[in-house]
Amino acid sequence: MLADHHHDHQAVPSDPTLRVKALESLLVEKGLVDPAALDALIDTYEHKVGPRNGARVVARAWIDPAYKQRLLSDATAAIEELGYGGAQGEHMLALENTPQVHNVVVCTLCSCYPWSVLGLPPAWYKSAPYRSRAVIDPRGVLREFGLDLPEDVEVRVWDSTAELRYLVLPERPPGTENFTENQLAALVTRNAMVGVAKVRPPA
Amino acid sequence: MNGVHDMGGMHGLGPIQYEKDEPVFHSRSDALAFALNMATRAARKWNIDAGRHEIELIPAADYLRLSYYEKWTARLEKLLVKTGMVTQDEIVNGRPSPDSNKSTPAVTADQVPRMLRTGALASRNIQIAQLFKIGQQVRARNINPTGHTRLPRYARGKLGEIHLHHGVYVFPDTNAHFLGEKPQHVYSVRFTARELWGSEASPRDAVYIDMWDDYLEPA
Image (cartoon, rainbow over all chains, first blue to last red; front, top):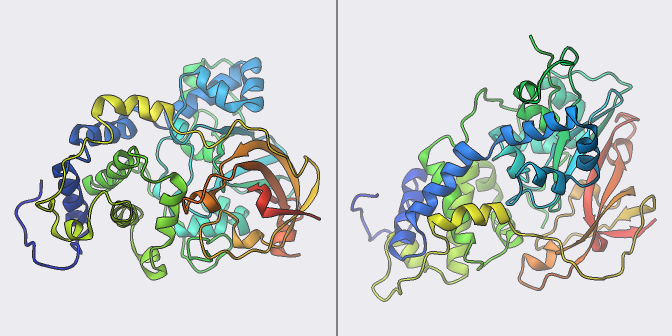
């Protein structure tokens, strides 16, 4: 809570921390915001909804061909089967990476991202460099992430301009034939599900 | 609007900064900015398109200078004033005016899980003419609206092909300005990298952009 401060100045606080705290205390005092609801919102994305959700979806698709088919034909429903959905996951599409096709996701206009399966987006995804370059130089961007794709691989960039949210289904790495679903899920990274990386074989 | 937010294809915005083991929120104030936006949005005084447009209205130099969540805070202040939830005086003073009515919070802690789990559908289950079909050649319209649009500049006037049909969705260009939902069909449209960026681009690559009927014309 903000300590007593001057009320006679004409501008909002220039310090970003003070500015948001001033807004919080105003909205709480006016009864427009419940502080416990703020904590619940923050806790949800810090501890409950994140890329582990998406990793479970990917692992299931790897071990269950029927599930994979459902994921590719109706991703929203297939993801709901595992108990994920809602805010920024209302309308999902899954994009399958293969040896011939590599999918990568961006939002050039803002920061659209599939929260229900990946949580809130990392800073780089929301940043001007990624948003500006992913569509014009996807191969260069992928190289910066350590992924150098051969010329004969087709790169598909998906610009999230509408309310569709995209989850990349990465290729299952070699050496995982006997892995359980949980072991597979542990290999799947957020970056692979955005399409800026592959899932690496187990060490 | 042809704002700096519409940055697909721009150069000179610097290297991608990758942070290993990045936290969900970098500070308590980032977390607060996020939560305040989410909690007040639940009052339904504005929609997601209006919220996005308010960020686009941040002056270009500020847009590039401010952090992501600083923009969220600035956007929220504007929306709260525009919708009459708070006054500019209250924002400046950081405390309610003496004549301010006490309200009921838009969302309480026990309502948060269901609110997030439910989300908000942008699709509309109505019958409306579908103007384009899968496989059809189309051209993205060369329009330059001064208000909100989700048709990025880099695609305007370009030739593409309808790749997927997503269904009927709220139209952001009107919805952002509270001018109605104007639901219409949305498609994933495939544009080759060479069509967008010229002969130096990869002959194999393509960009898929989600577009509403109003963004397209037959080619």
